[in-house]
Every structure is written in C-alpha cells, then in structure tokens.
Image 1 (cartoon, rainbow, N blue to C red):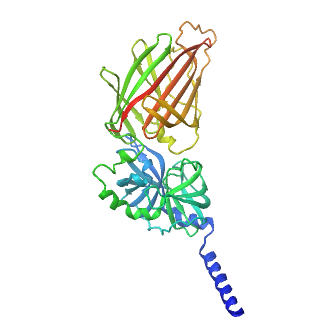
Image 2: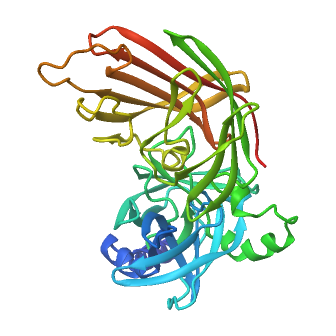
Image 3: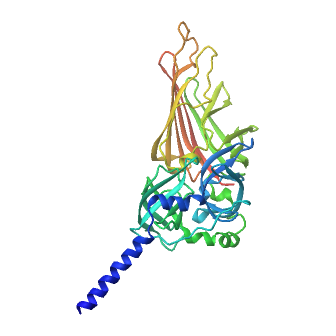
Length: 413
C-alpha cells in the first residue's frame, strides 16, 4: 500500500512539474503573442490614420477585432511598428461583437487557442489607446452566460477600457478570447468573447439575414437613414421652442454627414467626425444659436474610461474683442435620464468654459458670456445624445439663459 501511495504521489509531483514546465513567465507570453497584435486604425477622408483600438491576427491576411470599434463604411489599416497593412471588414457577427478583417499582405502564423478556465492566469495584450502595445496580468474570474451569444470570459485583468479588440491569453501564450466591451457590473476589468467563436464568424455571417450583419447595425455609429427628432427650448430673455430633426445621409471613414433642420424648414448639411471633440453651432430664428458638442461622443465613451480634456475647440467667441474660451470636459459617469422618447441609462458629459474680458472692455451686450456649463447625456442604443442642457452667465456674472434639447423619437434607419 505504501508503494502505491508513493507511486501516486510521484505521479502528482510529475504532473505538477510538467504543468510548471509549460507555463511561461509574463515576458515570454508577451514575446510569443505580441507578433499577432496590431493597432487598428481608421482611415479618414483625408487619408489620415487615427488609432481606434486593437486587432488580433489569426492567419495570413486575416484579423479579428471588436465590432464595436468599426464605424459604418470605414476604411482601416493595421499597424505594427513600421509595418502598415490596409484592411477592410470581411465578416461581421454583431450579436457576439466579433468582426473579421481582410488584410491582404498580413503575414502571421495562426495563434494557438484554448478554452478559459476559472482561476487560471491570464494576460491581456493590446495597443493602449491604439498607440502603444501593453500587457496586463490577472486571473479568469468568471465565465458569463455560457452557451449563449452573450457568453463572456471575465478576468481580473485591470484596464482603463482602451484594450478593446486586443487578445486575452493564458500562461502558454494561447489565445483565450478577444477583448470586448466591459460588463456594466464589472467596470475596470478585461472581458473577452471566447476564442472558439473565431472559427464561426464566416459561417454565421453568411447565414445571417441580408443586412443583419452590417457594420452599421452592429457598430457604434448610425447607418444612413437613421433619424432623431428633438424638442429645443430656450429659457431666458426671449423664450422659444422648436422641433429639430437630424437625419444621417452618409457615413464614411468615420465621418457622419447629416441633414439638420427645424420642422417645416429645408434642412442644412452638417458633418461630425468619429472623434470630433469640439462644438458646432446652428442658427435658429430670433437671433438664437443652438450650440452642440460632439453628437457622437459615445464612440469614445464606449471605451468606458473617465476622460478629461484640457482644451475643447469650436465654442463661439462672439465679440471679436473678447478672448477665446478656456474649456474642459469630464465624464461624470452613468445615470438614468428621462426624456419624451423614454428613460435611458446614459453617460453624462459636462463641459465648463470661462474667459476674462480684457481691461477696459464695456459689457454693453447682454448675450456676451463669461462662463457657461454644458451637459449632455449619451445613450449607446440611441447612437447619439438623448438630452443636452447649456447654461450661460453674462460678463457681469448674471445668469443669462439655458438651452435644453430633449429626444422626442428616433429611428435606426
């Protein structure tokens, strides 16, 4: 019996030793996995590239990423160090947030894959802010909604939310999953879709009804034909109320081309970029102006990071003798907001602006402002803001008015 136990013990020790022999230290995991990680870039109408996330190369000429990163009709490129490879969307599975890119010229070896196990060590690798490759370590903490399209591999790997589209690996540098949107009840940690789904993307895309797998329906920018109907009200000197309609005419290269107008009047063309962190203005009757900040800001908020910007452009100056504004914006987190179109769980953005008039300036016009506060609530399912409030204070410090815009209705296309 003693010999039997001794043999069993030796077998367990040998198995543990073998397991330790296969496990790699973090630097070797990174060394093996990194060649398959690429920065995902959006190519704009001006042919300039802007980083939007990461992608995982899965074979020669093929890569996968999170569909949430891909705007409707966009052109893309993959970059690693000095190598740049053009890419385009080949197959989309928005239900699983997994998209496949066709990247002719991409030369990589297919990565080994494995199924995640709770408690195993895991490493997330991707391009931080789409620019610098990084690695973070943790454990597989939970397997969520197994057997459904909502199945997710949840880890304890910390993230600021900027590793979207990157890879989640085990300690043998095998791919466990592709980093997807974080869960609302697990902010700040990496969540991935299972690696085994990669083999099913093409088949599911081909089997989907026509148009169901388009990047416009599964992505984060709206599709052409999408529209929003808003109520605009002004409280202050010269109160007013109007209905405002916005319709998407075209989406290409991360730029949304819109028609914006008051109900019953011919619309005017307008554009908004994927990462347009600036204000724009629309003239209204009775010498009023609608001031609107980054209508598609949810494209950036999808990364689930609290962001502060030192300077934001585009707020109207007014009198040429006045200085430009000093602006800052911050993510105030999620809250429920009720508007005529319904109640939404939205991310609230607040922008503050201030300026000091030059010495000797005479504040003789009541609409010239020295301070403002702008708040907007963005709901991802609406693909635009659902409410905004814009308050101003005059040069003498008196409250001078408030614009409010609330969503009345919307349609995807």
